[in-house]
Image (cartoon, rainbow over all chains, first blue to last red; front, side, top):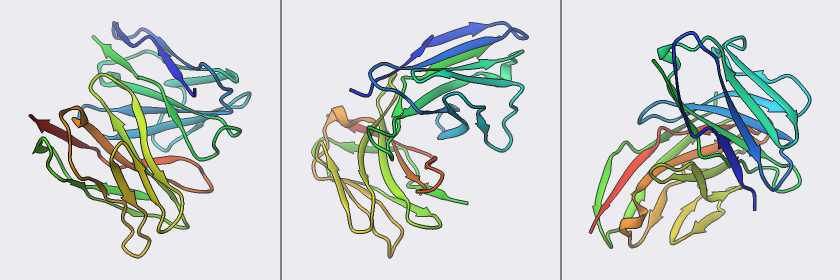
Length: 117
Length: 112
């Protein structure tokens, strides 16, 4: 149980285009989803926290107009990188939490590798 | 703010060696502590956790004890295998905000 999927697993796009990444909880309802960014050989940095049906809370230094997050249902959150540039190339990882399953535990997706040319 | 500091890698060991990866933390309040593992090409998986002082988390032969007095949560395994090669992340979760704060990760390679 507690499986989280991400789609796509990798994407290559041209500079200036927008890319949407989906995060789905497959067998539980995710009241909260988190989006992280991981640079090569570095740790995960939390970008934002999203609760179903409300606006995402962004971490300091993360541009909310650049990284649009939508959590429209209890099983789906999307991250859209708008007007992507090469410096946005990174590994994006989502996680999900279900208050009914375990208040303290996050379940992670496999990640999406974004390359902006 | 809260932070996690991990032993710098990479760490290379021979099969059946003893493993320790150090982790210390700084937090206000009483966080929960976690070890996550990331195998090549995969997402993070929870390896073990401890939610209060003196708790010991264990899984797959790995152990870590929540030491409040030394603010540490060191990961240990008595006899590592090649299949343990991965990146290991120590993390804490503040009870209030419920956000995970990760250490920088330690890459472990086990040679046969």
